Image 1 (cartoon, rainbow, N blue to C red):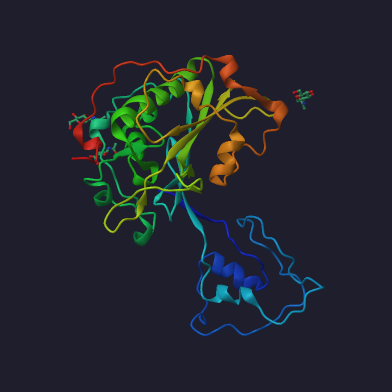
Image 2: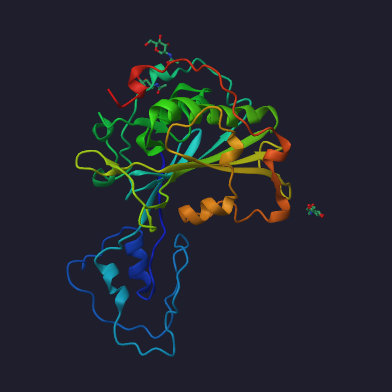
Length: 332
Ligand SMILES: *[C@@H]1O[C@H](CO)[C@@H](O)[C@H](O)[C@H]1NC(C)=O
Ligand SMILES: *[C@@H]1O[C@H](CO)[C@@H](O)[C@H](O)[C@H]1NC(C)=O
Ligand SMILES: *[C@@H]1O[C@H](CO)[C@@H](O)[C@H](O)[C@H]1NC(C)=O
């Protein structure tokens, strides 16, 4: 299984040059038990690793007096945050170590990918993802008797083309605690079905799914984020909401300069009446970006974005889903 670790460093200043780079890449320097020497570089550090996010602050700022070297902390180890990126057959997932949930899961669905081999979710079992270090890993026992379903972000049914691909959707790095009755097994499942049905209109449908932890107005007039935490010790956050951003493409791959049909939705992690129109959950992509701190379509200019819900009927189709085997729920 291929696994890459992306480091989006929250580094304020990068001035330790090569040693800094080595630490970000996880290499230990022999001297990492002794405090780093206070060497004050007088030129900006050579290269900021390409995997870094925005690094603000000006290394070698000529106005500030250089007395200390805060980045010497990296000689003890870079704190992160580290996002565990895992590449699977039908999706990519990035894991949020603090919440013990994925931050986002991106998949592609096509008419071809939905053609079932003989894959069956009854042949899959939920799996802990050993690509995440043990102390940050979501565990099967954390979900046990939690009352929540182990809710897929990339649905198992989207990986019908191959049993192994379907099996991969059962890694807990593709799973969040979801309300079962009325949500995961009902409205959310119909919503996932809506995404699959889009393949009759678009050659390729890309879906990015993830959890949100949104503030709610309290009785005292203040906004607070409250979420349950499951497991023993409690460590997996129960998201308050889930988002999906859908991109309908008219060709299989990325056609340069072509436009894309986009829709975005935020649903509460709660029972939803099947009669509620899906359109009620539609939001501008920017709302999800602000709530999640993620950037989803930064390379798609406005003139290349079409409204998906103007091209298709954005509504769920309620039909009876076959009852899932009991092992797909964690409430037993
Ligand atoms: C699923 O399991 C059943 C019985 O365990 C087996 O007969 C069947 O071939 C399996 N299907 C796949 C796609 O692995
Ligand atoms: C899918 O997972 C099941 C249960 O862990 C396992 O028995 C089976 O061999 C897996 N199938 C494939 C094709 O990986
Ligand atoms: C890209 O598309 C725009 C219209 O959306 C068009 O004006 C432009 O000529 C196209 N550029 C290329 C290189 O095809």
